[in-house]
Image 1 (cartoon, helix red, strand yellow):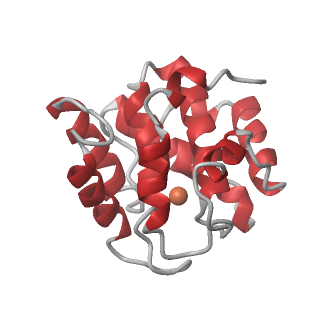
Image 2 (cartoon, rainbow, N blue to C red):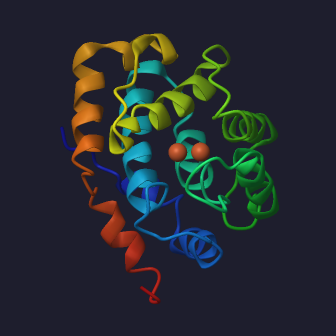
Image 3 (cartoon, protein in one colour):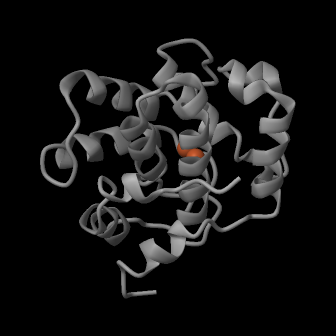
Length: 182
Ligand SMILES: [Fe+2]
Ligand SMILES: [Fe+2]
């Protein structure tokens, strides 16, 4: 299913992507890099249409949650660092209300803690990330997902196949065009 991402492009601006990528310490094309972010974004928006999650929070989670990793394996605190990076940029390169920022911060900070309960926007963020585990050879177990929508077999297999095949969403091309060092 194709999803029109144009409304989100108004919020995930070239300046925001430039700012994040200019400081990203790992390979753009690495396992936690931009193709992962883009699939998480598309997973999240597709899920949000079913769960009612706050779409801007979901979109910002996609581009921030792994943005402050320092390695591609065990990296304690990287979600918290992503949230702190977001706090610096909120009000400058994007705009979240206090309530929405709290959801964003919670989603980023705890996304690796295997939690499944919480606000539906936070749950949607976590599911959007976990649904992309096929890229590292893991089939997400429904028990480890948060929302009923993500646990649907057809949804899970749609995301898993894209992840397993390391599908590159078109938005990656757009993001790459915002950064001229690669
Ligand atoms: Fe992560
Ligand atoms: Fe991730």
